[in-house]
Amino acid sequence: MRTLPEGLQAHLDSGTTGLCHCWKLMLASGETLGFTDHDRTLSFAGTSFEAAAGFSGSEIESSLGLSVDNLEASGALQSGLLDEARLRAGDFDHAAIEIWRVNWQEVSQRVLLRKGHLGEVTYGGTAFTAEVRGLAHLMNQPKGRLYQHGCDAMLGDSRCKVNAAAFSETGTILAAAGASLTAAEIAGADERYSRGTISFLSGAGMGRTLTIRRHRKVEGQAKLELQATPAFAVLAGDTVKLVAGCDKQLATCRAKFANAANYRGFPHMPGTDFVAAFPRTGDPALDGGRRG
Image 1 (cartoon, rainbow, N blue to C red):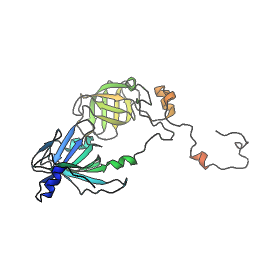
Image 2: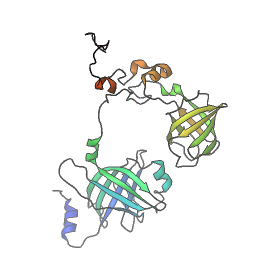
Image 3: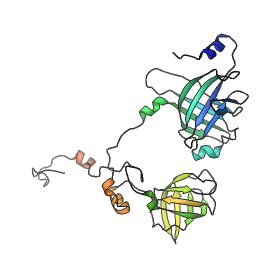
């Protein structure tokens, strides 16, 4: 049973209430946004909750145990803080969210209804819908290492230990068409930046990082195919930083990064052919000796 603050309980007991919902979003970038379904802006706990943003929520359901309770937040793109470009760029992906029930006449009388994270976000030309996942969904995330052929470390992290800066360089965008970019001043050989990243150091995408699907070297220029079309305008003259990609294979780790000692995969694990093998008369491998 939820225990309400004394002031809010008294307000509910009065029989005449003035309640509204407030949503607080904490983005991965550190930015905090607030929205309310009340008709005027409210402020508490250092956050201003913007009114008339077209932000609303579905029915909230709670259950016992560790089952994941999901709901949806939806709204029109009416606020200057909510626009399609930011949604497409992933600014709101996995943002932490708090949903409050507030007495708009006295905002100190409030109760936290739900905490969680934003999941899948869908949007159209004028509206969006975001899945709100409860904290229990974190229990469904894989933890620990994976037993697999490929490395499960990220290039340059504390487990990989590669100095990613030594495998990066900056250049200038010459042309952009959808997910295809052409950059100059990039000396890296063909495929060096495939599966790598491109970070924008200037222009509309400054501060954003995207994944490179394929890198080709053509007549001294870098031809880049991105995993997705950028959600912002990429213009000639934009400065970018490219970081080499890794396909998570031991041969690449050894030849490209000279880092085989820190490889975090299991390249010698038996494959499906070994698992499905069965004894056959006359097989020279069946000599009674050790296999492996």
